[in-house]
Image (cartoon, rainbow, N blue to C red; front, side):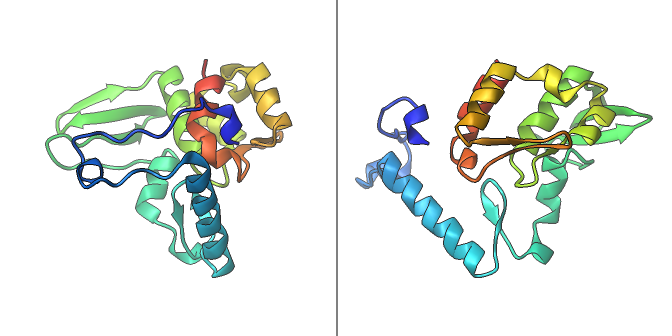
Length: 180
C-alpha cells in the first residue's frame, strides 16, 4: 500500500508539542504495521472497525458521527459550527443560525463520496443517486477505479462502492485520483 504514496518521511508541524519534545513520527511502514495490529486486535476482541478511524462493538457505533458519514441531517451549534438539513427534496448547509445555503447536486454528490468512503459499508449507489440525482459511476475517474480495484484497494458491485481493508490506509490518495 505504501508504495502508492510518494516516498518521503512524515512531517510534523514544528509548532506542535511532539517536535518540541523531540518526538518523531513513526516511519510509514512502522505506522502502517501498528495500525494493522491495532485493527486486528480490536476486531478479535469484538470491536471491529466501522469507519476509517473508529472501532466499536456493533451495537455501540458512534451514532452522531454516523449521521455525518451517511449524509443525514445534523445541526451545528456555536459560532463556527455548520450543519446539514434535508427539506423538500433539497439539501442545505447551515453556516449561521439564520442562514441556509442550498447544495448543488454536484456538491451533494462530492460530500456523499468523501464521507461515505469513510465507512466500512461504503456507498450505497441507489441511495447516492436518490439523494443527488446523479449516477455514481459518472462522477468518478473510471480508469483510476479499475486500477484501484486491480490493486485490491477498492471493492465495487452494482449496489455498493467501498474501500478494502487495505484501501483505508490510503483513502486520501484514492479520493484524490477518483475525483480528478
